[in-house]
Length: 92
Image 1 (cartoon, rainbow, N blue to C red):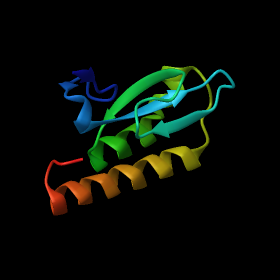
Image 2: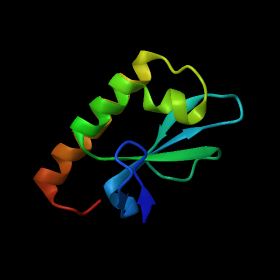
Image 3: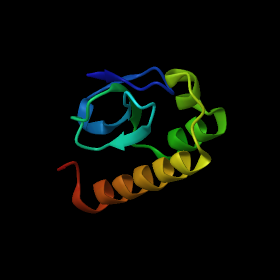
Image 4: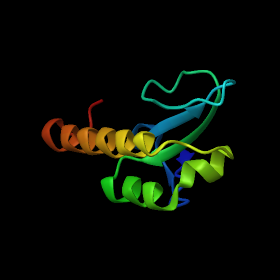
């Protein structure tokens, strides 16, 4: 179980995506969950990803300014994963 940083809800790891900040202060998506660095989780829900974008949640969590492109990539990724879940069920 991991905590979604936007909603504060505890969810199983496979229902979340990890976002990681490495030593060079680069923030990226970590679909494998194995990249080195400080991680934070967000639910695979487009509305929650859009809320994270509007509130710039990861800027606050990682205490750094993150480009808007990252948030666009996050929303796209979450939307894609949500569509995959609808098509293929919960297998991942």
